[in-house]
Image (cartoon, rainbow, N blue to C red; front, side):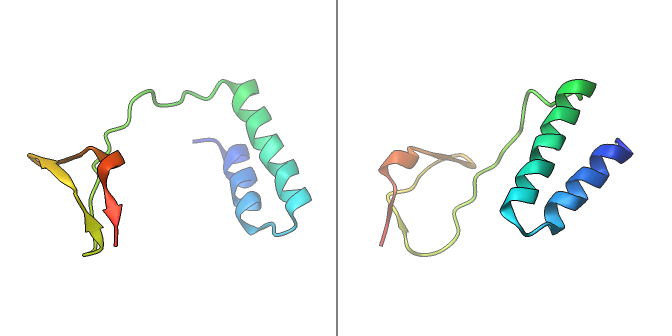
Length: 73
């Protein structure tokens, strides 16, 4: 948690003009690289298929596989 970074992120989300938003994004990246904020290396993601339009979905246990074969009707 970092108050300066939180302020930048809050400003980014409420700034509408693209040029200003990109300047704030650059400040966020600068802050992250200057302060060497630790980033997580691993994420535990669970994919969930919702809807009746998805076809050819492969399930193995509770995991989805072969997304390249899926189709939407």
